[in-house]
Amino acid sequence: MDGSSLDPDPAAWKPASIQNKLFIGGAWVDGVEGKTIDVLNPHDNSRITTIAAATAPDVDKAVEAAEKAFPAWSSMAAMDRGRLLLRLADRIEKEQAELGRLESLNTGHPFRDTQILDVPRTAVTYRYFGGMADKFEGSVIPVEAGFLNYLEREPVGIVGQIVPWNFPLMFTSWKMAPALAAGNCIVIKPSEITPLSTLRIAELMQEVGIPDGVVNVVPGYGHTAGARIAEHPDIGKIAFTGSTAVGQGIVRASAGNLKKVQLELGGKGANIVFEDASIPAAVGGSAFAIWHNQGQACIAGSRLILHESIADAFMEKFVSLTHSIRLGNPLDPATEMGPLTSRLHQQRVLDYCRAARDEGGEIVTGGETADDPALAKGCYVKPTIVKARPSDRVCQEEVFGPFVSVMTFKDDAEALAIANSTVYGLGSGLWTGNLHRAHKFARAIRAGMIWINSYKRVNPGSPFGGFGMSGYGREMGFEAMREYTHPKSVWVNVDAQIPPYYPR
Ligand code: NAD
Image 1 (cartoon, rainbow, N blue to C red):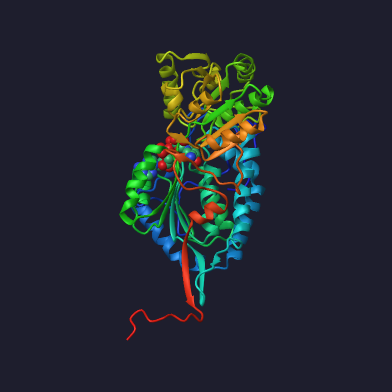
Image 2 (image 1 turned 45 degrees about the horizontal axis):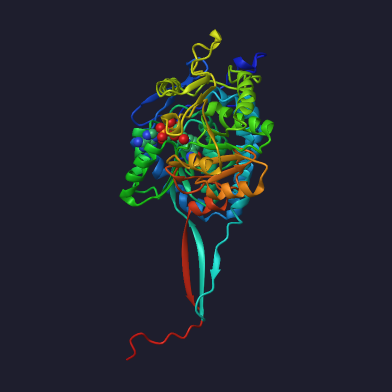
């Protein structure tokens, strides 16, 4: 896919061509069972393309291709593997606008975000792990005299990766980059709803010289292709990002061959604003925390917890900012909020709006589809602010949409109790001018990531993952390299004098 038919109207952009086959062993193929899936544009539910859908026999073929590629890939000099990832990072940057538009077209994520966040972050992730490939060292352990004991880290082998639909470009890079740097071969399944950017990345991987079979892409449904990856006896590790319920199923399915499992699951981010916070900074940061990508983010600040003394002043500004957000076609560079990624998900979020009302919550704004008739065919939901109680469903369950539940607190103890009152523990933010309080809360909140006077910062060097029902294992940084390797301890008798155990 080179270039595009750039229309003077950016909202009418269409890719020049789209890859829509499975990528197995370096070849673009149809599925063994000939199944297909229509991929839709969430802006108007029109069909973008029809892709080949992988089922179990395709996953088996992909695993065979990965096994064939593994000996050469894992024994290649780490610096050379790294160089290929660095080349890929450069190639992605060269195609920033095209990739950004493709991601926006398929996911509904506004182009201004895919352009300045998703694509650059994807490139930076491949670059970070390209640089990491030859810097991830083992160690020498001081043991008894006469022995040398060293620890090497070996690639796991064939890894299965399953990703959701909310940030496909970024999430596939978070999974593939460390796995490849560590010398693994991959079978990856993007979401059936948003497979297009992953297929494009596979084309770019082939172009920069990543050998055939090292990465295999099998888009398909979860209950077929995904389930086969989870249970496959020759896959040594599974990295899954998605819902908690499916994650639990993955753990069960992995038991057959005791795969390593890494889970990035749901969240219900607490975002606490104390009375001593900078209100303008907290309003802007809290808006980004929830409205970015229509709230379809596992780390979204979906529970806004305000000190009662500043709640009114905060809400006045927050509601006014929310009313000013421009909903529209994600390809339009002026759009600040696009549609939800699918019709089914739009219905799910609207159901939560009804549940909030039924439970006695006060819908401050939103709670319905967009007014603009030009958006009527799409999966739009207005940004929704609801005043609710900590025990309400909408304060406990993940809505995963442009929906924020607002609660108030009297003192620090109550703020902490609310923050820790869900089964999740992924991302949390707090806004305060008090350093002591900031660090105290950073320790006390049960979550894998805490942002102080900011929200939703990510970087390939900084571990990403959660506690509790948000899963286990970490993406990014050295932690990710550990996740994609097995430690091996090697003992060498250099000149140890060992008394005989059975003296004869
Ligand atoms: P989902 O669990 O329905 O699907 C995720 C992926 O799993 C998809 O590729 C899907 O096809 C596949 N899948 C579905 N059933 C499967 C099965 N039985 N076996 C194997 N694979 C299966 O989630 P979703 O609706 O695509 O994404 C939204 C969820 O993802 C939310 O709960 C959100 O919090 C979570 N999420 C978590 C993170 C994180 O890093 N913690 C990031 C983004 C999204």
